[in-house]
Image 1 (cartoon, each protein chain N blue to C red):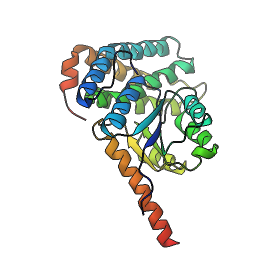
Image 2 (cartoon, rainbow over the protein chains, first blue to last red; image 1 turned 45 degrees about the vertical axis):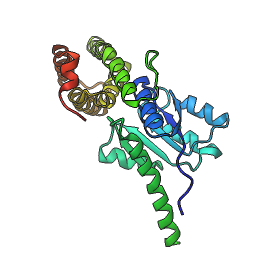
Image 3 (cartoon, each protein chain N blue to C red; image 1 turned 90 degrees about the horizontal axis):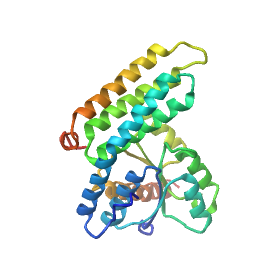
Length: 140
Length: 128
């Protein structure tokens, strides 16, 4: 059985142009509800104020607090301790992808991205998580 | 979000507006990279300059292709990797000016190439 559909996405990206085009891609094209934050601190504040996302999308390289640090701090908050997280980054060499997955990321979306395909890619990662859960249940 | 862009009901129209806004401020992004490169060359002992340069290259690498500037994004990606390798290989007190000269020449080539294109040529070269 599939989990509830993906609706609420917490998105952290410091570049305003990329944030805007991703917002377009995920809201207007994908139909998701996006909470777009310009920094890791803003994301942490949103979650501390009660926002509970279904999924977390994070840029990796940001000033002051980078994506991995933001994820680590989100993991320390109950509301986001187990939510699937995905990194969106231009740094997608095999060793880098392995590093993101070692941090608990469910996937990596490469930049640059096609705005018209981004929501499909996000949905695929969400559905893959359903499949992973089913496999774990069968294995158990 | 840039102040002059509003996401309405037509995603295609909104995307065009966002692309136009990005295109309009691309020269400023390139000037910033050139400025940080000059800082690195004139004050090579200040690490912060290299980190700013790396961040600007990374942002260009990650964004240009999304807005139709695929070749520029590809060049920025190569230079980001080159600069990152240079920074990881630096050791305190080492004479690494020769290695950075290669990075600097690559950045100057990219900026010169971009400045010789007009925006429509840059954007029209290839898709993602």
